[in-house]
Amino acid sequence: MAAELRIARENLEAPFLKKVAEISGQNVFACYQCGKCSAGCVFGEHMDLLPNQVLRLLQLGDDSVLGARAPWVCAACLACTVRCPKGVDVARIMEAIRQLSLRQGLTPVEMKLDRDFPQIALVGAWRKVSP
Amino acid sequence: MTRLLYFPGCALKDQAKEYEVATLAALAALGYEVQELPRWNCCGTVYALAQDDLMRHVAPVRNLIRVQEAGEDKLLTLCAMCYNTLSRSTHFVQNPENLRRLNAFMDEEEDYAGGVRVLHLLELLSGIGPANLAKAVKRDLSALRIGAYYGCTLLRPREVAVDDPEKPEIMEKILAALGATPVAFPERVECCGAYLTVTKPEAVRLRVGSILLSAAQNGAELLVTACPLCHFNLRERRPLGAPKLPVFYVGEVLAWALGAKPIPEEIARAMGVRG
Image (tube, rainbow over all chains, first blue to last red):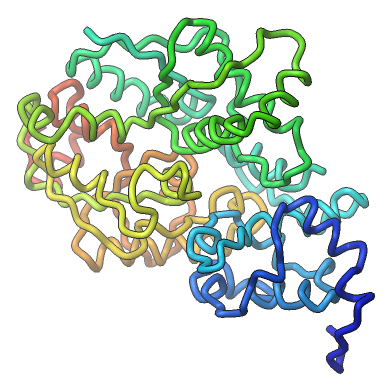
């Protein structure tokens, strides 16, 4: 995260931001930072950035958001998506950030195969780390 | 007998077998002739959220084509995750451009024409109506204080929700019609952690602890769910010290009420219900 706030055209038109918009189909600038997504996120306590902070960094064109752990903690439960008063599908934005890493060959999560799992757990977990 | 085409999915043929067996017995008692969808394949498990990812929409839509080939327009699901992926794919192909691209992408099957409706068991039971359900009840379950745990995939996103995503009542109404005592609790709509159980089991344990506590504090003595992954997490990721609530599938309680399956002895004994 930048120490000083700089809002420049080049940040707002950053190529990574266009990719996020393309993959997610969402307009990050629709977010007005009410924080409802973060307030209701049941995994927020495990995230380095809360969902509304992820949105804010995107709005500022700050690509440090691509290295955040938050999208990998997100379980895509869609609580934020159904609650957003601006209709921003936050879960799709989290997915877009994951996809940008995965498509570069980065998979920052570890599978903990400490026991037997139902197929749906394994397929779901692996789908999340498949580009 | 009403004929109904049914999509089982992987879990109902394996670790959630008891959900399938009980529900099919109960539906037979309600006058449904349930037929398994021929040549069904994996629903995809989780719906693809990326907009540019056509490949991941193929699996669910192939199943819709099988329904079309069978000459039907309705498909019953029991697993909440299958319901979610299949139902969302029916919305995806309502966009004519998405449908055209998918049909162009697949070359081994006939084109999908659209129009299949994916129905969850809860919607089917709700459609039968409380009065008709109550008439079919054979066993008194009023001593069972049941917390209905919805989880995510029955309620979100909004376009596939089986009821209001924030204040659902569909499962409680069905349980009440079956003569049980439903108990609503705040955490019934919150995620259990789903497939994070493979990558972040400690986070899932915290979630499960919170859900079980919420249910117990509101007076539930038993939990029901329609999701095999919730069922797994609620049973297998219970943290030490959390309330030990037994967890069953909604189809099992249905079968108990209709006399299609015996109530497990430990439940009958603990809750003072005649097995």
